[in-house]
Image (cartoon, rainbow, N blue to C red; front, side, top):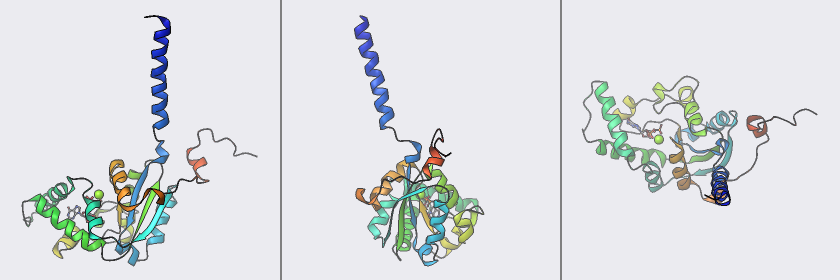
Length: 224
Ligand code: GDP
Ligand code: MG
């Protein structure tokens, strides 16, 4: 192959690589959706919850108070089309583990019931929807929010510190578990969920002063 042709191919590969790098988002640009559910608003925990994410170094890029409709809630929980089945299977498994007979062996029926209860819960009053941005934001927010069931959430997590509820009690009473917050479970889920709650123009791109100390590679310019 003549050198000129070889060089042209090599350059185009490099150009592709450069474009790929240019299109790739830096970790610090990852985003997640957080919703303070009606119990969080009623318990006057909006400020406390925001503080927990803010002090980590995460950046809020969108926020609004909304009265959700049942169809928004349905859209939100079914962005993953397998969610109903998964929740149903998880619930059946936990009934069996506790030696309790599940109300039905059909995971989709249980998933439907859980969704119905979530609609009732989330449409019962205003919620605060937010988009947070930062490195590893999805797992970091999940970690400090705590696990889904407050009874087993770690001490120090928001759910562990501020709410008491269990599947046992909420299932007996036929209602959704009150766990204060929704936080996206993966980057893919976050992207889809954000589109349900926010229009493009409602998210703001801006720079935080603290980003330099969090992410700057050389940390130059600190000394006078
Ligand atoms: P999250 O991402 O931590 O909110 O948890 P999931 O996405 O798995 O579930 C969403 C919601 O469904 C939870 O907040 C609960 O209200 C409900 N849910 C999830 N798993 C179960 C379960 O095993 N039993 C019952 N009763 N409800 C569940
Ligand atoms: Mg989830």
